[in-house]
Length: 339
Image: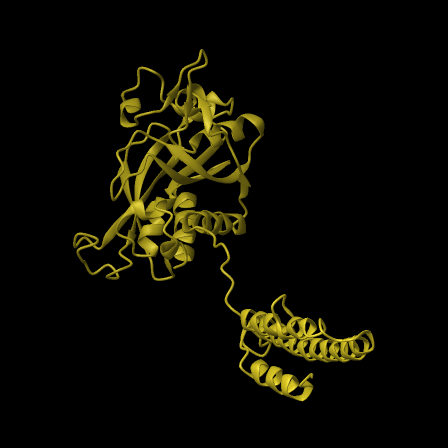
C-alpha cells in the first residue's frame, strides 16, 4: 500500500527546513535517491502478481512525478532567490552623488614656468626653446666665458665625453646665443627649461633645476628698459605692492650686471627673519648684454644693445608659495602636488 498523502506531507515539511542548496540535495536524495523512499516502494512489487504489479507500478510512477514536480518547484524558487540576491549586491543607487575621480594635476614647477612665460608673452616676447645637451661654445665661449676665464669656476658642469666637448647646459643662456645667431634684431624672446649643475641636493640646491631666460635686443636699449621689464614681471607674479632693487654685480655675459631684489613679500619691506631684516629678497641676476656677446653672434655692438636676465623657477616658486625646502619639488608626494 502506498501512503501517498503522507509522503507528500512529509516532503513538504522537509522542504520548509531547506535553507541552501546542500540542504535541498539531502531532501531530494531522501525521496528520489538510490536508497530513497520511492526506490524502497519499488521493492514491495516482488511478491505481487502481474496485474497487481501494473497497478502498483503506475501509482509509484505517479507519486514519483508528483515528488519531482514539488522538488523542481522548490529548486526554481531557490534559484530565483539566488538571482535576486546577486542582483541586489550589484545594484547601484543612481540617485547617490558620484565618487570623486582622481585625476592628474600640473606640477608647481610646470605651472610656474608657464605663468612666467605668459607674463612675458603678454609683454610682446616670443617663447622659444633650446638644447639641453649643448657644446661649450654656446654654453660658455659665446657668452664671454672662454676656457681661461675664471668665471667658469663658478659653475660645476656635467660634461659628456666627445670631441665637440658636449655638456649638459648650466643655464638657459645658450638659447639666447642660438636665437641671435639665427635671427636679425630686434629680438624679444623668453625661454624656459631644465639646467644642470653639480650641486649637492639640499634645502636650497638641486643638481637639476629650471630657469626662465629673457632676452631683448634693439637700438638704444638701456638699464631703464631692463628695470621696466623686471618691474612688470615682479608686480604681475608677486603682486602690485612689490618694489624692485638693482644692486651692481658681476656676470661675464652682461655689462653692467645686477643682482635683482624685491621688497620682502612676507613683511612688506619692514624687515623679518626671511629677508634677514633688510626688507629685500634676492630673486635673480640681470644686466645689459655684453658687447662681446653681441659681437660673437655677428651683431654690431655699436648699433645694437640688449638686456637679459635669468629667473630661477624653484627660487621664485618657493618665495611665492612660502616653501622652506627645494627638495619638495622632486619628492613626487601627491599631497604636495595637490596643494
